Image 1: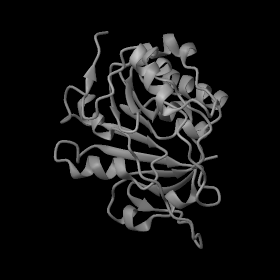
Image 2 (image 1 turned 60 degrees about the vertical axis):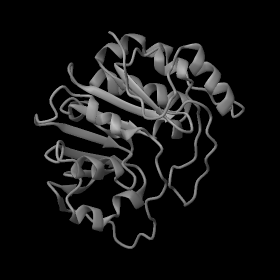
Image 3 (image 1 turned 90 degrees about the horizontal axis):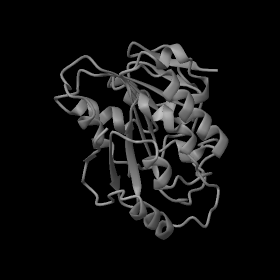
Image 4 (image 1 turned 90 degrees about the vertical axis):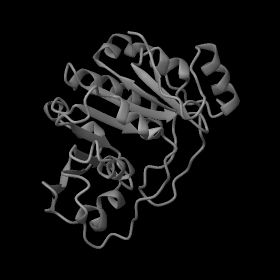
Length: 241
């Protein structure tokens, strides 16, 4: 179930009495989002799944080229949806508390860019595969899925009750490159960001995360090199389709 917290920039159902706070810092190459569209001046609707502290929304609103974009957010952690200071600054137009698995397909279809940044590694392998297929299936024909994840089993544990911070899987670069991304970037420590189009749905069966906790940074780097995945931070790679 999704519970709407913010509607059209107004808090309509505040979380009262929670002491949980959004946490975690992202090493995701978020800036890749500025390079996805041919025309950033167009009216753009973004869905930020697992928005956490709201770093993506803050970045978009702070940039003159994208400040007019409409950004909605969904997060399963109560603390992320209990952020009145951020909501008062009108960063996110609509906010729902709930899991990505609960987002209706018709809602997904209306967004130009769906962002799944630093999220999929927190899911079980089967849920991750299901969610990726669902997002690619449900998004519009000319929409994009922007996904970031460590390209190895990056050990991380929960910090607070219910914060969903534990990492359950690692995603090899082979899995992400097999989806035929339109563009990608990799930040240290081997955190990849990939832009997928509808075409990636044809290759979704090749997305194979691992639960092997010994899938180290070194092994992840070797696999990235084997499929010519460029890992120099700060580079935005566009691939021929």
